[in-house]
Length: 246
Picture 1 (cartoon, rainbow, N blue to C red):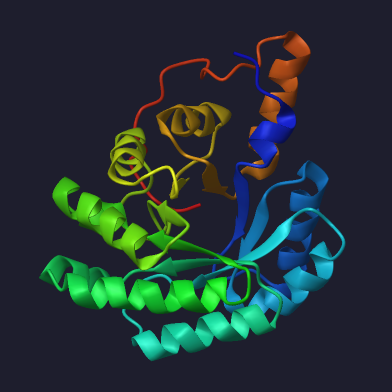
Picture 2 (picture 1 turned 90 degrees about the vertical axis):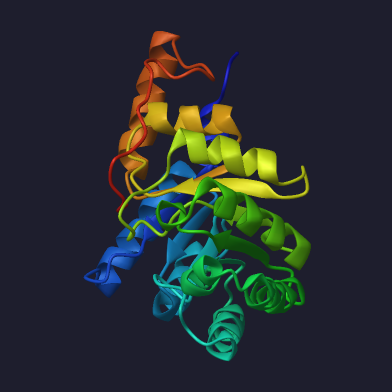
């Protein structure tokens, strides 16, 4: 089945989350996102003023991370961080659930925290994605976290921060897609560096992928389009990513 360059670009959240990135690096990241017309630029909270200004008037949305990367911030701190990002013009929030509480079985805490972040986001017409950090959870815990996220009003469930011991896997995307209704979308992130991995995640049910290798992925897509080989199917089987990082 055919797929367009726009279909691929609008799956990508171009990530500029590494701690060492400078203001100029953030601006360059926005330029890359604008060049390929990605879905968002996902940057650190303190970078939102730069990102919002750079993306103004475009179809690329500013996105940030909340409670990143460990998820252990107090809920009130996460809510404050979210509200500050929204004040700065952010339109999508990727929050890390409290991994320790999830592993402890404190589902009430986890759901309540997500609900507070979802309420803050939706009050400002923003989207909320919940990062599970799947590398630390059992399959059963992943399913429970997905269901909690949906009950709490999240718009997406997301695999990874990119800073855990492993990143996205096709198997996890399939599991998460099956665990939520059509009202909740799935984002894959962590270790996604090729077009084939993006296409494999798409086939598995992902609507978005968090990537920093945007230019590489899109140029590969352009090359396949020119060759008449750009399709929904990956060109070769893709193994699960062994590591995280963007």
